Length: 484
Ligand code: ADP
Image (cartoon, rainbow, N blue to C red):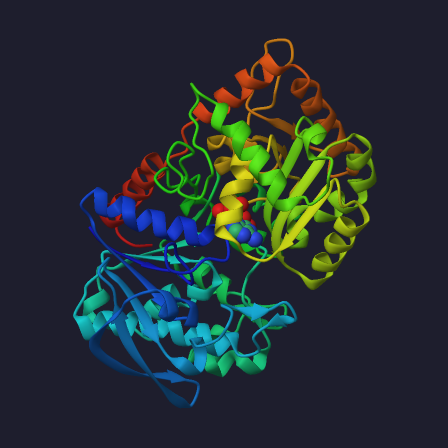
């Protein structure tokens, strides 16, 4: 199959969250499966600074409202294509700064969505599937049903829309509607109107042939009014074409036996390197004199976007008790200014127990996964979550809220049978989280039990192969059964 993956971010080029891991890994797996898969991304400054690119010689004039904006297509050796437009993408961040989203995001991503389709025309590339990811590419399926409906090149192209996080929908004021170049007849409740605003994700949900999200549980949760973020009705109408496919992780990139960022390596059989990783992490992030004694204290890790979704309010409230338990907490994160401040203040107040690094740091992330005993994800909701999968792979036992993909990938520890890969809690409360933490600490005090559990987690298989096959099966079925 010819598969085009349109994504606002992808590993190894640029990443702010799990979507980048998914898009990058899928393309790689599809190529292994001998599909002709290409990736299309905006050419952000971060990509230009880090990747060697060749000019494809393709230039385009893309309508954005009543003006035309120039774009060029660049590519790299791995069959990824990049839409160059400095006006929109030559910026320090992808979507906005800590102060808020870029004000012209509607223009930027409707431009990107049109560019993806124009690029196919210029290359005479006839995709079987266009796989769109999140609101930034949500307009593509609708463009194919409207502006491009008579374009022969796309007559057999099916569209696939994946929701990585329903909390981000690409909502814009009605004054931005003309930037999409769609007619006003689309600005209805059946179309892309959403409580008086324009909703880019909704465009994908109504127009794509297939809709998917990134875990079974989340695919059911989003049909409910309490977790459908206003789109549960729209999704309910698409229920028959809605799939939940769990994400994987790239086992080449995330491998504690060969990870180039770690001071020592380890395997399930020989965990001694993990103790070294812990010691090294402690000496990197804590600068107090009592390290030796505290090597033995349990270490909780967090690598996360600092956003409300991640349950940070629970952590903030629980800090005094976490400290009182004698636990150490190491946090790496970037996001809302509010949390930057709260957590930085907490690390100043409890320098021996709480370490906070604000920023996006791939190297430190790897070292936290390897060096911590437990990995904390008390998310309010979690479409899939990659943190817990990486943590399992690195023998850091997940303590997670029972929601979305966390519920699908972590098995709660059962003291009677001694089974399970982590600790789950359902109640979105500080007590709920602390109860799970206390259960975890009980296991920690029993070194043998702890090792068994670490090993069991490391054995779990969340590699991409199975998920990529599932996507390919659904693509095939969609092409066979015809478009909806
Ligand atoms: P989300 O996509 O909602 O941010 P996921 O758990 O699905 O959450 O994926 C997050 C990914 O981004 C993981 O690979 C995690 O290691 C990585 N990540 C998140 N924040 C940081 C950070 N500050 N520095 C480095 N990596 C990070």
